[in-house]
Amino acid sequence: MINIKANSSTGLNKTSAIDCFQVKNFANEQLIEKIGAVDDILIKHIHETVAKTLNPNYTLI
Image (tube, rainbow, N blue to C red; front, top):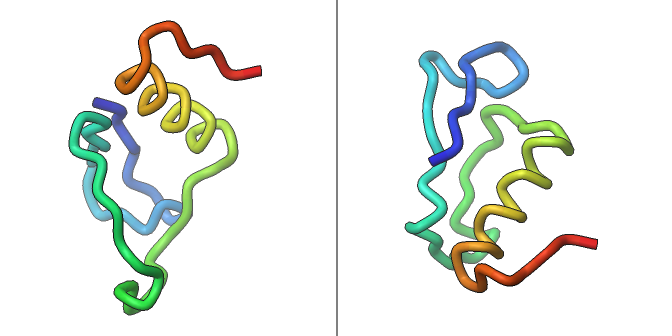
């Protein structure tokens, strides 16, 4: 689990979490509106965590 703090840039009202064991695929057309964003550092952390979940030997170059 990766925690995401609630603030104006994330668009969250309370601290939330990403469960990297529950990866789902969806089409961009299913997104209705943008409510916030995450920074590049968090995106990299999410990417690494999901990749390591799928392959423990994975390293991001």
